[in-house]
Amino acid sequence: MNQSKTPRTRKEKALRWFSAGASGLIVILLLILHSAYWMNQNFLNNQNFSQKVSSVLAQDSSREAIGQEVSDQVFKDKPVLGRVAGDKLSSIVNSILGTDIANKVVTRVSSDTVLYLTSAKQKPIEISLSEIKPVIVTLSTVLNSVDKTSNVSIDASTIPDKIVLLEPGTIPSLYRYSVILSWMVPFAAILVIGLFALIVRLRKLSIRQGIKCAGILLLSSSVIGMIVGPIFKPPAVSMLQSASLRTLTSNLYDAFWGPFFTQMTYMFILGFILIAVSFIPLSRPSFLQKSK
Image 1 (cartoon, helix red, strand yellow):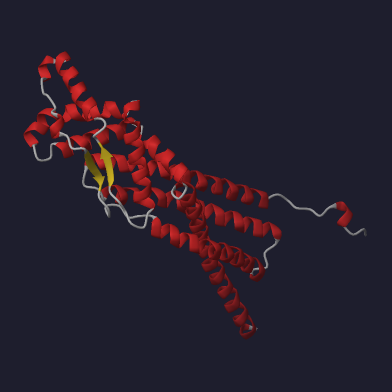
Image 2 (image 1 turned 135 degrees about the horizontal axis):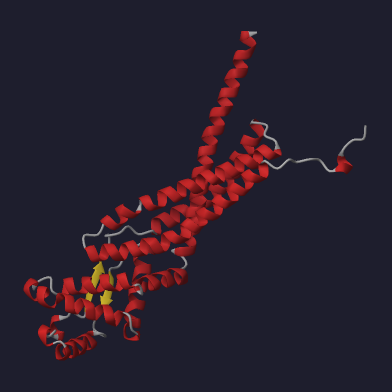
């Protein structure tokens, strides 16, 4: 009797190990599929990408960060003048970025950001000051006339025509990742379907058990996605040396993490529904039941 049970026990253990490994692989593949969809909708779709970047640049904290970065770079070789006029220039740039005057500037920064993150060859993200320099000088003069205690003039010659917010290579391009994911999508989809069908067949799962298994896989994948997403934020932000650019990057990360979290939430709800459905008693229709 012991000899007859041993092969059976080994087979059951092998099936359990295979099911566990296949389930883990399905969870990872589901994350890959969702990541590919998220990247396609939010990064490779220029219209959606530009809208998100523009909305981030319109935030008060982003405008303050850009204003501070402009001030830091304008006075980086003049620390004494920077201590006196830095805050003033930063607040002026912040105010201008919130008006229609700077629409072209914001649009250009947005398009540069799209190219920076999605192109094979990165170009620097620059903010053009040539169009708003006269406004900066005018506002400085007006503020001096109002506030006599801070009579610091900002000369247009001290302000460059443009400054670089991000040099190429500071943040990795998503181009390679998007290409890899686009190639993986069809294989990942086929593997998910094939592995799940194999689990159902080898484990001889009923319809209810199959529904429950699918729900658990979706639930697990969504929870992992929700946990992993925020983990990448600190490394992404820490790539930048400037505190103001870290604020801007943090805002961008949050804007693009939002849609991915929404996808994970939908998958979580779907998984929860499937698990709940699996506990509903299933009875055969009366016309299919055999009469005694």
